[in-house]
Image 1 (cartoon, rainbow, N blue to C red):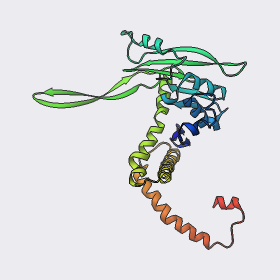
Image 2 (image 1 turned 45 degrees about the vertical axis):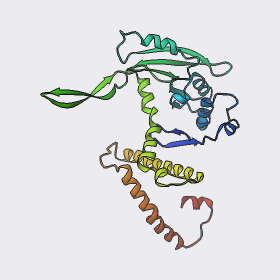
Image 3 (image 1 turned 180 degrees about the vertical axis):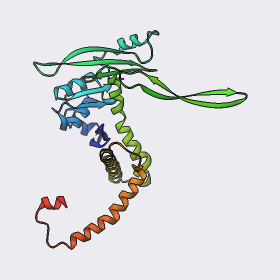
Image 4 (image 1 turned 90 degrees about the vertical axis):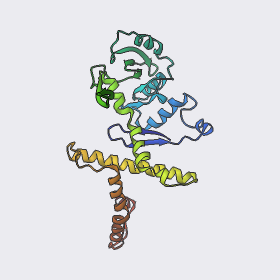
Length: 286
């Protein structure tokens, strides 16, 4: 499955099942664009024209994807690795090979792409020198200083025959656009860690039936989204104070209890109601 998630909450907004080459060729945008661009456009279609920013990982990032999203009223931010057509990757590699550059330096190049027959838009290629060179393509962002990237490091020391490990943080400067990328870059990975690491329905429910496996994955997504939704609302109500916010396992336990017992209580109340539901709208509200 391929996912689209909301960066602020972490909630999955849309997913697409990967069904093989034959069925993929029948889907929208497949005949016009490469696979990674077509998938991105299908997932983002509901948000065309909203000027939102789509943040993608390197598997879906390219100049073509950026240009097509701009044509459809969306901005783009992604890291370029293999899909480097029309991207100045070789130039950035030469720039980063300069040993006088300090770690955290960045370089920006700008060009214009057509978004319709009569209009053009600017897109930006950004290189950020970390331990490994990071290259980005975007249509929104700024290179003003962002928060420093803090990386946990350790060093082993020996003193009087004793070995000890010292942990410390290494801070690397980065522009705001790089911070934006990494703040949204890991949202789906974090969702996967909750769903597959802690919950892990696919492991506890042993089955060889494919639709059971699909159901367990989607049900796991729903449970994880419920937790993220509760976290978002809890943060708003408590003005950012998350000291007493339950961990994921405790939330799942409370949710399971309420689904088993409290739903049963509410169904009894419904059976003792004075009359039938009047219409579909009332039924949905109940």
